[in-house]
Image (cartoon, helix red, strand yellow):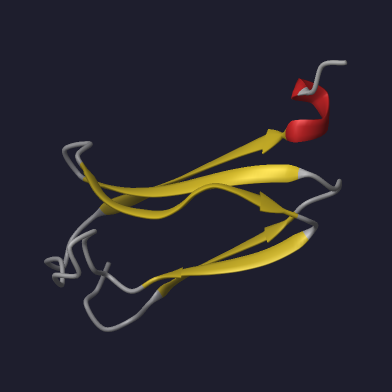
Length: 79
C-alpha cells in the first residue's frame, strides 16, 4: 500500500449463490481491516480498500496481504 491509492478488488464469479469474505493483514499477519464478511454475491462484484484500519485510522505505507475467501453456498446446503 502506497498511502494515496485505494486497492480495488474485482471478482468475476461463475455461479450464483457465493459468499465472500475479504480481509487485510499487515506484514506480521495481524488482521487490520475486514472489508466484507460472508456477503452473498452473484457473478461480478467490486470492493475497495481505502488504506484504513477497522477503526478508520489511516495505516502506514507498507506491505499488506488481501485475503479473499469465496464459498459456494449451493454446495453447502443440505436437504
